[in-house]
Image 1: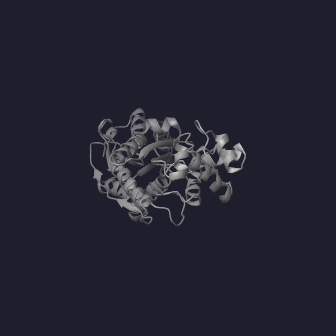
Image 2: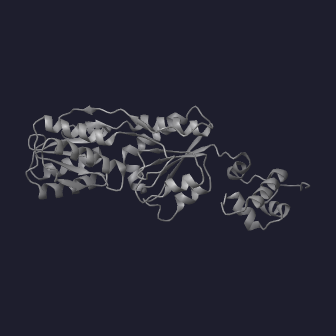
Image 3: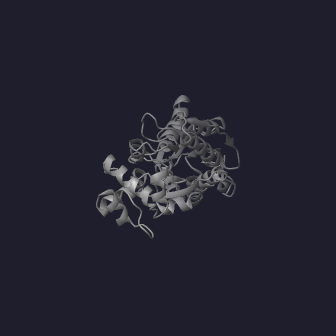
Length: 337
């Protein structure tokens, strides 16, 4: 196969490989539907001609893109307004600082409605992925499994599938810690603003709250679901107060929702913590600025992100998929409870 003079084009690659330009393009874009023999012919032409349109083409030869994708199936508004995601990105960036890898942020709606995240993953446009904020109807776990993409979930994935690994806190135990503190402080009518039911964090924190109340023979019927946002927490708390005006405490499954819940409590004319004690979850910086400062359970997101990167790098270096890691947590007592 002889080389042409000048800069080789995709048409040159197609001609040398004996395929159409469209087929050559599909190989360059890592379309999994291309037959192996055809793909190898196109890759051989790329190597022989020195064709290199961009980093994606280089990755076809080296099988590396030098990127790690942080995949967040949430809206732009949620990602850029929730400090949890800022902490995640900070932890990932810090962990990658001494490597040659760059972070790529992929944002998409829960369920990946238009399939953009799925196509990116299946195209192997990244060396590995850290998937954050996984929902029950997200099939991203299936996408990474089917293309054998090294992946670590930040937060236990809702899907139960062999080979998936993650780093998280024990959300059941964390919620039980918060609720137990309220019980021990003498509160007897304790409600909860729970997280989304289609996320493991939402389901697990609800389970932890309920288990403590059941253990102590206290009613566990005061439940409203939120969406891990300030507004969602406020709306859920308003509904909770309307349905259960006798509440004397509430465990709120995130600090953002707790901030909104505290606004709703004050708007109802009740005092915190004299009338209703409030405990949150995350220990965001926000917790020091609520009125009064928020008692909350630590969710060490920066450290979890750093751990997730370490687990992913081990996979990229050819190591086995590591067992899930559970990070320690603790209760931080402030004036709200």
